[in-house]
Image 1 (cartoon, helix red, strand yellow):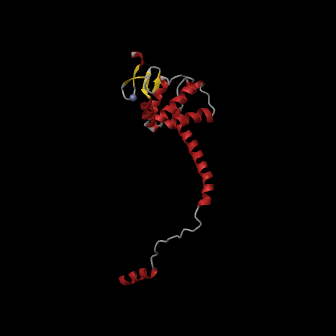
Image 2: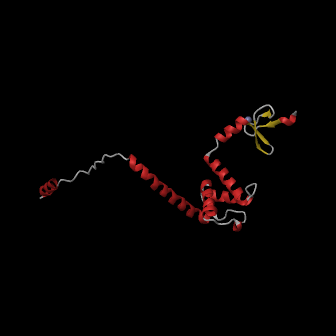
Image 3: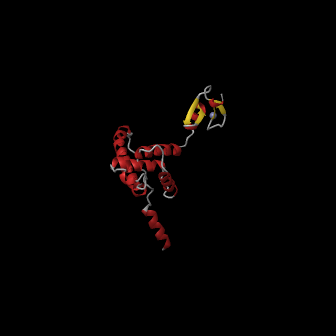
Length: 169
Ligand SMILES: [Zn+2]
């Protein structure tokens, strides 16, 4: 029954998907369940960030895939502007959810990113600082009670200086 034989997209081995634990990767692609799990575990943070970003963009534009225009923009922002995928995602959340802008003017693209990336970063940085300030209230309780003894730099003794001058005379 050749139809049951598939090639694992990760290890390249052909196997019977009715007999071995199988994961369907996409419409016509399969993998051993174990290989798919290993692949998931070994993904880099950047790959995970890109996946989260792509998922968000597809939801944002209500599209089943990331369109060519957005792919080109992502490439450009990463290579030329050195933006990160997580930074771009945060910027989109900032612009559309926090600022409440509509996607009507977006034309299915993310051209707004370079214009608001820094604003978004500042917004998140302010949030981060506010969070730290809140957390420090708790930290106060755990601070040691002893005072730190200040160690002063050794003072120049005026007497010695005077002697030096006197020697020269
Ligand atoms: Zn495999």
